[in-house]
Image (tube, rainbow, N blue to C red; front, side, top):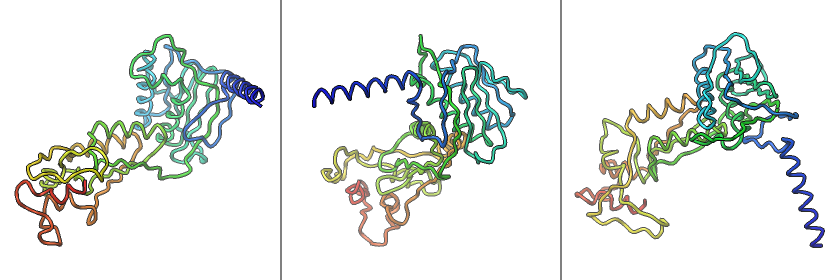
Length: 312
């Protein structure tokens, strides 16, 4: 029995290696609607260019994203050229076309030994096709520094892809634990790699109020901060009256505008969550007069958080 098991494992390993060497183990997230593989591969060289068939600002931004993404780890300077004629020889071509199958976010990607051709109805489709193209490259393409002595290959494929769901969302809870503006941007960068298009940004809850409201300054002066606690919630203790409330943070209105624009540039909409009237202890701690139960929230200096913090 043991010999049979070992033999079976060796056979599976052989087919896995054979599959890998012949490009049949292509894994993409999410799985595209249609993918055909062929023999051969495209090799990205230092002479490569990105050709673009439109002056559309969004499409030009996508081409710029792709140029930067490819240039950093390879060390190549890959220019973007706007042209009316696609050569499809030795480089990467992006085109806006009319294809009713693709919709607003779909794309078609054709890779052979001579060229890479990515087409879509809208710039959003080019952006999502770019994510697929990056996944087809060696994993070192994610490096933030130059990777030397690497052959940058893309397997020959024909992919047609479009989303099954128009709303593809992730939730980022910045209320219970604060994340900086740059960390939110990184989260957006990570989510678009897998073609998510909506960020549910959880901005307020009992544990913290994270968005500046200029007419109600205590929401962030008071409600954005609490005593630091680590470990399981059930094991935490209530804060002392004089314990500093230094754990937290908030986004200014300019920060929010910057995050919204950053997301928009990457075809992501932001759905803000502001919890009222439930889950509003941060707001009530900031403005105790909002409470419907007089005396529930102390108002003496150093005691504002005593009830609220117990639930953080």
